Length: 310
Image (tube, rainbow, N blue to C red):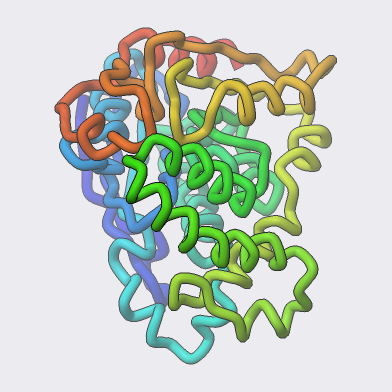
């Protein structure tokens, strides 16, 4: 395989370094995937402590004849700058993720080695949540691959993650955490009823996150999935403790029931990074992700098969 440095959004306000990895000496134009990160300021490898799931994908798919484009997330490069800007109250996932994913897709379409009709989005975690919206708002992908996503709002996910983790703590820490989270939960639950102006002027965890959460909640994942007729593949780790089988994967199946264009697969022993689960609980996520691993090869093969099957 070959690699070349590229720039997403070249000439714009927030240019981003990226790497385009592609098969060595292909005989014809090849399919490609755009990798879209999970939450937080991720680098192009989507580094999570000692693991680099996006690098694993980029190292593997070109050996199967599929090009991969990955890039640094906008908040990874410009997070501090964006927080200081006058319009930071207006910050949404469009600024954080959607615009750059669409620019990445367009960059691939302009490349002579890529089949413009076979460009797919691979979204992980929050990137998986947003993947159907990115496609609908200008990505125009051939298909959608959702890794460890959710069709619930991020507000609901934050609440349930905290409610799941608190009982895993010691008794004293449980008492402190419950008391602190009670006020946070009340603020989170009030977000959907706020006006746009109220949300833009409210703070959560000392940051302008309220409008970010409200705007995302106003674009339900279910609406995009019900509307799309494109091929969609939803993959989930059976031991994922960040988005769970019971609350997240099950809801995907319910929403997409009867849609023949949407497929599902569960990997019983894998975690949120599609690596072997070790500790298996939210409380120990740092220990879990500090063990160096690789994305399970079965997952990588399933992604490749889906891209070629179309």
